[in-house]
Image 1 (cartoon, protein in one colour):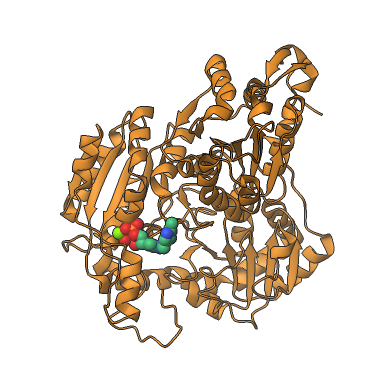
Image 2 (cartoon, rainbow, N blue to C red; image 1 turned 90 degrees about the vertical axis):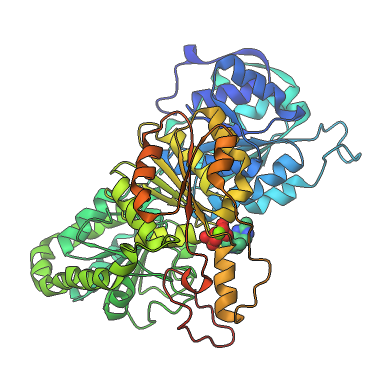
Length: 584
Ligand SMILES: Cc1ncc(C[n+]2csc(CCOP(=O)(O)OP(=O)(O)O)c2C)c(N)n1
Ligand SMILES: [Mg+2]
């Protein structure tokens, strides 16, 4: 093992399993952890206190998993969360699946029953390992106190290798409370497993050559970039390839920030919602898909791209290639490494390719300008209640290059996915598209704010998603986090209501929320609260939230209540729906 901490730095002697867990996490230099205690893991909590490690009590374990997930995305290092036996463990499930589907490295500790009494109806006992196993990349059950360091090492290796993912360490009470005489050598960790990507693998050379041939021939190639570009930190490689070959870049919601949205080669979001990217996909003669699963939203329910367009698919997970749409060339490997290889393979042809694609590239600004002109009424709308597009425009103005915007699963994510513009490459836009649960916004914002304390963190969430998570405002207040939470207040489970409007002729069922003043609620919880009803007040309110560094600010933004005007892409008064259609 290279570069491990020197033996003199390592603990040794008799200690309990909880202390061994904490000592290993200290060696791994993990960031703030999130969890809620219970008897089983208390030795671990005690060790954290003694070692002076940062751990935040959250009010729902799901939020701890969400916060750890967002922390991991910003830092590219595993986030850490924990839950106690039974309900604590089962509450982790939704958050862990988000990380699993999005490829985010997380280490989750779950307390479990004392094995001397398991299966005797112990309080809170349930078949938690069976419940958690499909929610994670690997579930590791720790059966001996002496094996805590080894198995935590394994957890880091699994979480950060290949496509990263969450790992559960299931720790029985007696293993956590039990003691063992540890030697200093027991406490070692491979530093290369502490961040992602732990190791890079290059695509097969022959496949790179075939891909290069396809790209060289193409008149209208287009890059379709997903969240894998972040997991690989392939920003420079992507930009270098796109610029060298004059290839525009479209992105999924997760792939936003592969290159800066403000870059002239960026053509924005593709899939369910799009500015100009979908039309460019339709007109393309060669698609280069990078770190993208081509799932339902990216493909508009598998309507895009046309099966006849040649497609190159680069992904770290071999079995994702060709899963939803056959690939003409499969490039199995790391996104950054694969893009570098393509750039190199095409280097001699780059000058010719750029010259040949001059007209193609010139189309991009004019198409974008027409889109902007067409969208201007919405982007600059002065209407009250506030138009979502105007809210996105104000976010574009108020947030800076290093800001991080965390977007919740409802409309908040879709509207900002379409209209929010990152100003630099990197993780400046974090939507929870792994599982698209509502409720990620606030806890994700907490994780992102702690991960990037010098940057401004903003979370945008629906009122439904915020209702789910209100308790975490107490966490943010207690932690002294200067997070700005934008609540999209439409007094509805809006996405559901909009679909009921479009598809069930306005027969609404269980999609209305009561009118709430979230700013007043925030103030009652000791936070800042600003209610915004006039769009001209948005800029000032956002700036005041961004300026507050020591406590959360809730902006309660009153947006349209008209279900015909809620969807980002379609005005559903004009949508014609056939049986079985999914319009949005
Ligand atoms: C946990 C969970 N339950 C249900 C859904 C389905 N869903 C998608 S959007 C949405 C509406 C959420 O309401 P709100 O958070 O207020 O956002 P809005 O659409 O009104 O902006 C729902 C229920 C979901 N994504 N996640
Ligand atoms: Mg709502």
